[in-house]
Image 1: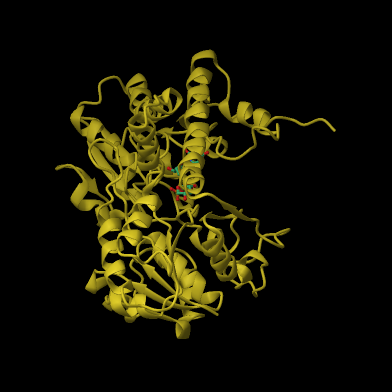
Image 2 (image 1 turned 135 degrees about the vertical axis):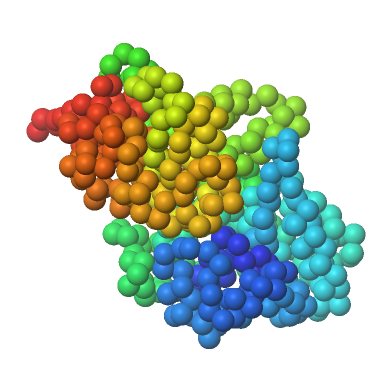
Length: 459
Ligand code: UDX
């Protein structure tokens, strides 16, 4: 058991803190936002993440929440930074919060006798850990304080499972820091804990690779992973657009290329492109990092450009079917950037809605979780509907933007009864098999929309 402090109770910080407490450590979670900390003390989760509250309940006696840096620093053997690094206008990450937190922590490290490892989990430009190391040196603390980078790869909506059963634990840093973190992650790496009922251990997971590297490689690996996944999505979206042009089915193409182990099946789901708090920000940041270091990362620029345009394919399809959108009632189903989260950051829904409004459509929107949260961001005149039926009533097209499972239960007959024209434009290719035959259906890269046979694999 170790004393660990986590600075920042955002997505990554909170999941990390709660998971480490669950794994047996004594954890202090710090945030400068008093309301958030008061809420957490009262058991209120500031984010929607399945299983996280249960995980907290099973580790409550080992975790505390505070706004005091002093409390966090004094006893901690490991101190993890998990503060936000939002994007600046030019795409570069804004490090104000991180450096602010680092300065606060360092001021409390002066005079502390026991060794401390400062770990960065925030996604930061390559070289940031070295900058913090320089600060440590400037105060003459380098004998007692070491620096590590420990990037986080968790997905929203699956944060608990991704944290308890990660595909790897990556630590960048010198020997002392790596050894301390190996100790901190021992129970996780060796999977020596009883899997909670709400996050069962996936079959075949017996141990987790612990990969130690130099600081800069760890920092870059996080960006490289996200950029590669973003590239897969933009690639399959481009193939989908070609499918639309030549009359092929992108789902079948994805099935086929995915069987090649070098390509892999995942992240080949065509649609309206990626959103969320990571991919858009991290791809722009990596491009900016390469650029400021004298390298023009052309492939990544194309990935970003393709993603920017892809969401508007839905509107093109609506125009192809309906002509001008002026005065047409259109339902937008789903506002979050993906199902299973209430996050609307960089969600494709918002620019889609703005464009529909710009073209004069009468827009009605629905989301099972994020409707209230989204209201302030919706353009004037957009009607936020608490029921799917209300959103679809009298509509001439439904644009499926987020593939919430709820929408699968509607049924073609109901859609035909509710809508003026049962035109279903599926931005996620989620309901092709269900609605493909029965409605006027248009997917992305599924020409004509007719549901086709899955690839038949002959034994
Ligand atoms: C992502 C990474 O997966 C995670 O490792 C990293 O730490 C943070 O960023 P997250 O943003 O939670 O996680 O979402 P993810 O499930 O990866 O989806 C990202 C976006 O890509 C979503 O908008 C999703 O709809 C889209 N997507 C994903 C596709 O369009 N097609 C796919 O095949 C996969």
